[in-house]
Length: 110
Length: 113
Figure 1: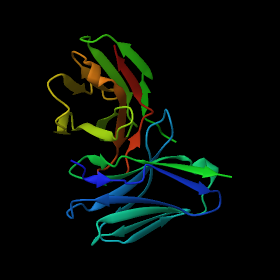
Figure 2: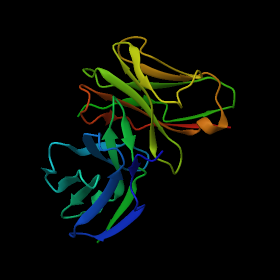
Figure 3: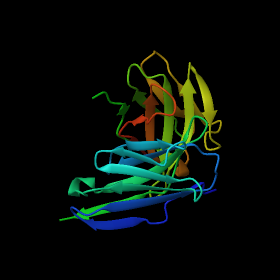
Figure 4: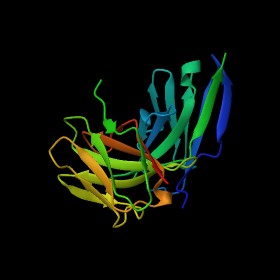
C-alpha cells in the first residue's frame, strides 16, 4: 500500500546548486501536502506545505511545486547548503494523520 | 522555540515486558500523535488523540497498544507485551491545529531483545 512514493533513495548535489526532490502520490483526493527534513537521531522537522488549491509555495530557499494532474510534487532547494544534508520526506495529510513517503537522502558536498 | 520532549531516548526491554514511552507535547497544542519508524523503513502513523480520546488509529495499533494523557501535560504510549517486531524509533508529535505541520519529538529508540 504505497500511497506516497519517493523513487530516489538518495541525491548528491554540489553546494550552491539546486536540489530537486520528487514525490508521487496515488489518490487524487489528497489535498494537503508537506515536506519534512530529518537528521539522524532527531524527529522529522516540518519544512513547507502546500494545499491543492495552489501549484507553488515558496519559503526562502525552499519551494514546493504541485502538479495535480500528474499527482506529483517536488521540493526545490536553492541554493543548496551543506547543512541541508538530511533525509527528506514528503507527506500527505489524510483524515488526521500523515502518510509519509520512504524518504530521499540528500547530500550536499562542497 | 517550544519543543516536544520524549523520554527515555533509548529503552531496551525483554520480549513480553510492558513498556511506557513518555512525551511532553507543546503546552498549547491540542492534537497529539504517535508515529514509529522501523530501521530503514518509512515513518508510520500509529494513533491520534484529541479531547482525551483516540481520534484515529492504524492497524498497527492493536490491543497491545494504549495511549493516555494522565495529567494534562504528559502523553504516554504503552505497549503491554512487547514483541521483537516492536523494535523501532517511536516519535511523539503535537499540533495546535489539524492540517498544520506537526512538531515532532526526537524519538525513543525501543529495542526489544
